[in-house]
Length: 456
Picture 1 (cartoon, rainbow, N blue to C red):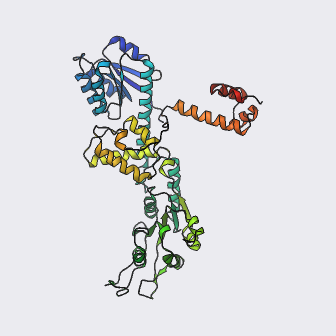
Picture 2: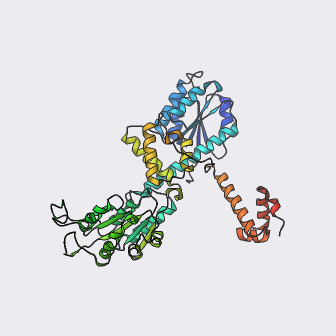
Picture 3: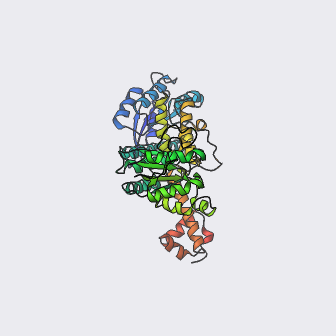
């Protein structure tokens, strides 16, 4: 995450609380304001990532009108700022109203410094994550893979592979679950190739009935069959000079596999009803969600065709294996759909972000896009909440935002694995983990693993 300074603006008109709050946030540069005018001035001057705001501000210290107006202006000036409402126990209704306006969270008086500090830290980390994702999106810029939205190492590796393979004419096989973006990558292969100025022709082999698929691929002559009123080029011939994308090739019937193999070997076709061979210069990209080696073993897919189409195989990871991509894509989709539907949406609530991170996305990017599109339409407030996404999440803990907690969980997992592999031998475990024995003993005591220290 960004190493930018952590800045907090405290909006509070009580001098005693001002002093208390000024010193209870370690690691933050804290500025204090007692009214709306000074709060907006500090917002412009210091650009804080997080703001705590009391609702009772002058000239309405006993009401909430001035505090709500201040929050509204803050969010208008800095939509990405995380505002935490500080309110009395008898004013929960206005606190909820402020959250509906776009505030991040609220904390009730009397203030528990530890609780408020935890909320502020979490708000800051969320702001930092959003900032980092936007920066990655900007860095992506107007590249040949501009339609591929990703920040995950897994997909960035795929992008580098596409860039290296695209200038060649090697037949490429894209493997991945439904909704992972196989056609998007196929188009990138075309756009990065010397054939970019020619046609990109796609055909879904699973969407066309077997009886029609041959004529769709190879074309036909007038009178070749009932209803063939004129000579018609097939998809392969139509793609001459460009790229042919055969999607869901695993569903290609056996009767056509031999004919497709001959085309791939000889680069010639014959239209239905003709004996004339037509040379075709085309780059072929294939894709499927099926396990082709299994189909080969089951004798439903030709082995020689499999080896012909898999000169270069690229495996596309599912969304659940793309670190950070679900949240990045969700934000991009929400912004796009919000604009399309005239909704001024201020992103996702904390509960919605946790739901996005915890869900396994069996339908991958296509499912995510559909969920966010519906949520953008159905959201009642100006933020999407978890209920709007309607995700069926198993009862498991979401990945925490707190970096210390993530680090400790990873340390404990590594300690247990190393101790198990070394049969609780401390010297061997320390060597495997790359730490000294005293450091290992310290970690074992920290995580209550003392019972494993019996062997030296």
